[in-house]
Amino acid sequence: MLDLLNLPGVKPVDLHSSSRAITIIAEVVEGELPHCPDCARLLYRHGRRTNIFADTPMQMQPVRLEISRPRYRCDACGKTSTPELTFLDERRRATKRLVDAIRQRCLGMTFHSLAEQTGLAVNTIKNIAHDLIEEMEETVRYETPVIMGIDEVNLAGAYRCVITNLATNNVFDMLEFRTQDHLKPYFKNMPDREKVEWVCTDMWRPFKRSFSEYLPNARLVIDKFHVLKMASEALDEERKKYQSTLTKNERVQVKKSIRWLTLKRPSSLSQAERNALEVVRETIPSLAQAYDFKEAFFRIYDDPDKVSAMRAFEAWENTLPEKELDRFHSLAKTVHNHYEDIFAYWDSPSQITNAYTECLNGLIKIANRIGRGYSYEIIRAKTLYAKHARKVGSGVRLAIPPTTSAKGINETVEYGPHIPTLIEIAEAGGLD
Ligand SMILES: [Zn+2]
Image 1 (cartoon, rainbow, N blue to C red):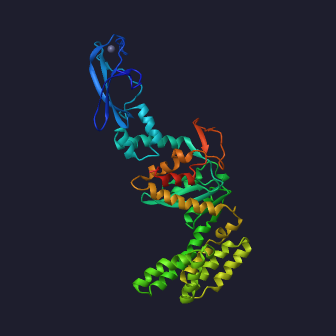
Image 2: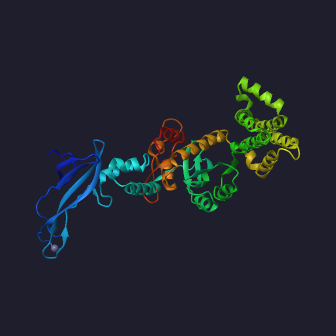
């Protein structure tokens, strides 16, 4: 029989296939009888042992390898032995080449489809993935971001903390929780933490408290996106108030048309939409007022000059009508509570916020796509270590030579998975 196995020390002697798998019967190629490792006597044969191992698929079918091995026994000391086959992973009941193939694929495919393709149990695939993840955590390290984003993403049942590199648009790390107990030791132990110059985040106070003592050169900027979102929500609150005075039918119409008309910036409205917005302004004066306050707030961020933006905010706040537009009043209060960190935007490198918004939206998409049915640990590994997303593309990212850590492990320094690539993979359905 043709040696279709190409594995050292065994030869195939039979093959049969069922609808579910191909079974190959293989025998150990026997040489002379071995000697006892303890007393050096010549051993004698003592029956055979047959075990089944999974091997790499053939013809799109799982392969079961039935290996029959001779057993030997020493008649002096009673010790028994079987020939060692180096290509086997006895613990996984699989050939080492199959385990390798699974390691190559397990972060880019579902465990279920790998189990189906190989005939191994889902749990075995999971165990192989866990070993791989442990190794990755030891050996893969991403370059500490100069401009860092800290986000929260709801994944596998809790809010997780995602740390991004906003200058290169990469995911840097993910933490299981966003509490100070998790964040503080993380920043304390972060390599090259003095490299971080800017941290862009939302108004979640624990973020600031957790990094401020450990990142000596970092300045906080509250992301523009989160501040403006509050203005949009304040406007939407007024729309809802108006809606509650309408009949059910009228309400559906208003929700569809007015919501988007008022939330968009005027510059992105079509002529027809602009006309429609005029009608809204004339017929619903209370909403028109809220709309004007929303737009005036957005224009603060359009101002390129910090001092003039601060003055614009003051003027905006002073014209807010008393005892009306509650949500706009709470927005003003929030701005005061985080005044320096919000206005730090005007001192920060201009690219911060665009990348930030893209990151945030992208991560939410990815989270929705891969979140179902996976544990946090696996989602983290699939996001951080997926091979395709880590591939260094042309352009922005620099090639950094491998360095050797104190432990002597060869580390390749990278920037982490590129967010646009992660999104592409997620949208193509490849990262599930
Ligand atoms: Zn012996």
